[in-house]
Length: 188
Ligand SMILES: [Zn+2]
Ligand SMILES: [Zn+2]
Image (cartoon, helix red, strand yellow):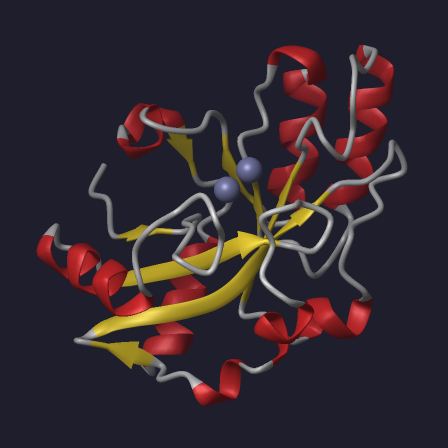
């Protein structure tokens, strides 16, 4: 599998990452990616940028150094009904939305039934493009049941987070949607 983009990244705008958008795009170009999604944490995480960060994307260029930019957020799943910490209008303003569970937003252990319910609800959310680091010890779900729902709804699924994220075996595009989206954004 040829890697063409990183669809879940954090920048200097979050307080636990240290590179600017321009530096990130330059690094993406250097390793041969055609696109980069910047997806800093949405407001329920303590390192989130101000809400205005996610509503001013028209100020940013569509490409940086030849790399197509997708501006978005890593939304936090907040409950077992699949609720997110961004409103519909905020979600609409994003090019690209990752939905992830973080322990500060969903503390403790979920039963498999609860985790299934959560992800099946997120799968139906039309604003979510990619499921972030879905395979976590505290949130085990029924893989066959849930990933089929992700695929039916054209979600990309990230299984685990760094550093394995960059290895192709850990990335399973559910239905080819990223290529369609990237062609749209690059005008091809
Ligand atoms: Zn992240
Ligand atoms: Zn995350």
